[in-house]
Image (cartoon, rainbow, N blue to C red; front, top):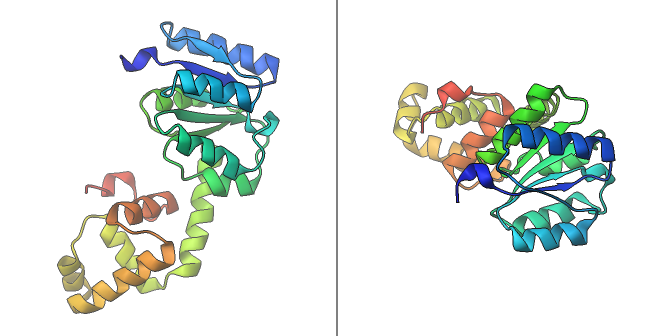
Length: 216
């Protein structure tokens, strides 16, 4: 299956934006089909037939309920990619789902460039957040990071994200390897991550390092 022929499932009960999205998808991916789902049951039926679909959902107008319910569906259909396309999203929703790798978030008042970027990101299996959502997520994660980590731990997290080994970090900080290993364990525990990749992703989201610094 070629990636530009994936099925789109539109779960948006606002007719004007649903029709507009269908038109936009047709202009970018004319080979793709668009299916419509008016509620959660219809969405799941379509996903059972097309488990690798791209779902565009207005969460605020859906009958999904709590953010955790959407996560359950996403876990069930792990091959699918998701775009939340809504006018109004709670801060709780953004904090809960903002870091999900298979989910992009774009607001309905975004310009065409960002909406198109969200579609292209989903097609490439890369979650895309519009600038407004991305800024909110970064600021929230940065605040959490600053609150949880000591200055020394923050500095070490940055070096981990830049690809330095424990020995290299110890050398730069004129510390023992044992001390750096202890700091690393504390960082992972505080951020609730288990791998260098997860820690690096956290640092990127928090804006502690730029993507160009990440070369692992």
